[in-house]
Image (tube, rainbow, N blue to C red; front, side):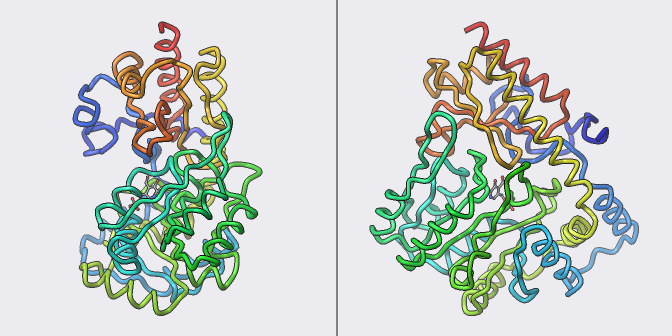
Length: 390
Ligand SMILES: Cc1ncc(COP(=O)(O)O)c(C=O)c1O
């Protein structure tokens, strides 16, 4: 466990999270706990494989052979009971890249695309930037946790939605959707002939007593109307290496998507991304098991302190997965803008503003838990002390 307690200086590594603070928050004087990467080193197995490859020193075009694909499909089988053929994989530099490609290829201009807000900010831009319309099915918040408003979901599908973007597990609210919820979604999407874009990038980051179920694994029928987006980059902290893949069972969709990606110039992955993806899936599991203990402990620690030491003025959503903590700050009595300024200027922590995840995220903040305990402790101290002065 000690590896996860080590504090590494990430400044001056061209880190988006650590070296871009001034640009994002308009000050240098804060502790960054925002963008979704981790302050932990990747598994030794990955770093060793990368070093070995770097020592070779020749970085020519790299292939993704059947052995690498076997590692991916074995991982999906062993971890998620998701049976995928090697042939159903399409690799791309990132989930965002793939989502652009899928929206462009499998939906039409002005199509209505459904999202469940509050949700990962780029979902909105992805739809709008491709000249499609965002339709929102707001999640129901009961003051403690989030559920799906299925009546509204169906009503929105009836308005002529052609595609639904599922975030599973859900960023930022931390829900790991149950089989029952996924089955209801699947049934409705089938009934209204809606394409499912399942962003499952956080699939491996699941806490005790919860299980991630890939929506495409529910039935052959659903798998045919689903594109699943996955990657080892969140799981093993490899975001900068840019390696991800889609699972596409329907051959006609797969051919169109592969062709479109090729047209955009994405015919293969970069060498180091390929090496890292392979090593992570082959040998990264022991590291991941340790990571999950650390993240869940961090979540419990942060929730307990943020709530009790602020007299419940901050309410922390008890997440079921992901390393992202969703904090309800409504009781502070600040406007959304005041809340953002408060976190930056008084607490001196760099969090993500909840309102960037859509209107229902107003007066919430998102905190990244994937850091050593001492860093988290410092962040919590800062927030608690600032709230106590209010
Ligand atoms: C739900 C979700 N999808 C996609 C991404 C980004 O994926 P990529 O870096 O592969 O484009 C993130 C990153 O935070 C995310 O949370």
